[in-house]
Length: 314
Length: 314
Image (cartoon, rainbow over all chains, first blue to last red; front, side, top):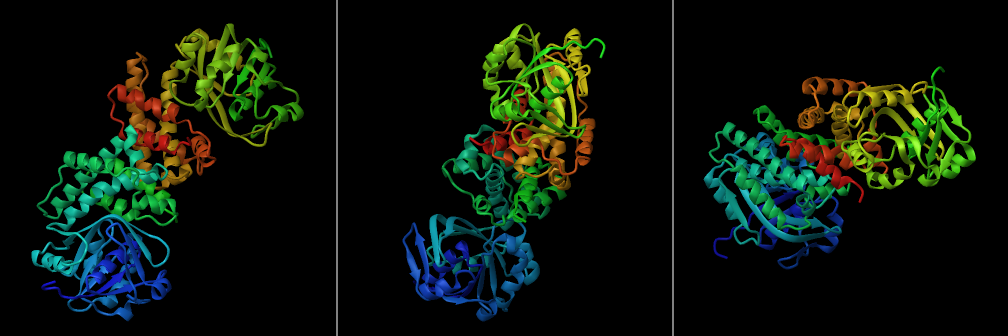
């Protein structure tokens, strides 16, 4: 395609999300290097398989590495670690960062880009919000079940940087949009993640349809959304961001969208059921801390946060 | 002892609580008949053993029956079924009710005496609130760990009836008090049961010290207590009961008392951990329904109620 420019890319955190989006970038012709641990041998021997609703494909011999140093500096780092590994991120990403490197933080939750900005500079830091349903199966196989769009924002909301980010994904089979306000986008996503991940886990690991079929839990979801919106709007104001969220509209839209998802299993609920660490701090702890610091009343977010912390495997 | 009058008593629901208090009544000389299912053979063969902090004792050959009809009419029915068995209570109790029979509903939660009053008449219906820690062990053995006081109220708060109830327990090794307002006593007990049973279960089955050590959960406990108090006061007003609960005082007192309990396992949390049905409707559902009917805002009670219903084994 006209104007395609292959970029050198490092995927740090090649779980389901990192492997999928990295494979899509490689499929389009980018020079993608995957940092792999668990799946290294399987991918080396059998390639990286993507089973997708949009058509299966295989990378027969992708470039894989056991350490970031083997990869070295790149044009773009895609950091798709779980938020629970945020303390490891700096050391894993640093060897891939050179002068012109940009970093896309493709992770869940609030406050992660701030960490990267502190380590590597805000100018080169982007946030990616994946709206998708992707699971890992056996080693070397990623299962892309539905959706897949990525919304990208820039840590300091520079329009020219957003254009550079969008350019990376041109010709890549991933629907991407850019956000003029990364902070607004993060809070908007929390409007779904906090109520539905939280209530699904604290109700024993139930699917979203069961949340919405129970009158108390449905009403609780609405109440949590309104609290997240209030906290988000206060945080946006505190950061002099112009955008605001309309609470009533957001609550209605999130609940309607979730009604349409049927028996969906939120990612944190899957972690919970499989005994894995949950992204409690990024999805619950940090939003709550900001709300409390700003004096926003968030009793439902607080109880969910406390319950989630207690339920998180030690 | 002077003035002791042996009463004919049926204990319906001879789990830990029923067996313990029935054994205490028998120990004092009352003519106690236990309806037993699970423990029938063990007690028939080996007696009913009470291992108590206040001294062990055994009833060598207590009167036990497999059906209420075998027992027939009595002076007092002590109904100590779990609240989850409320729909069975009428049929189990009815054969023991004659003209002068009184019924002590020694169960957890709100609205149970109303059911008995509807079935058998309000005049003969009493509520008992046990403040105790009693477990069943192997069949035929009850383990009384701590406390043991019973607070007794009358469904229509008649003073002469309260005197009759108090007389039953004279000479019995159980500390009893009477309440001038059964409804007030029920709501006061809910001020502990709703927050601490609820948060212990929805946080994955944690002890009360872990609730209070987490700043969010401790604050949530306080918030739940304030909601229960608001609901209770509205319910008391709606029933033209004179008493009211002081929310701030109650919250402080319940939290201080619980701080002193160390790693206590609330009864509903034990049920949850052992996979048994939990008393969700009596402790969470009915108080919430009353709050909602009275227009009292109870978002925390609602989320706990929804979570508990979802967590309850089907």
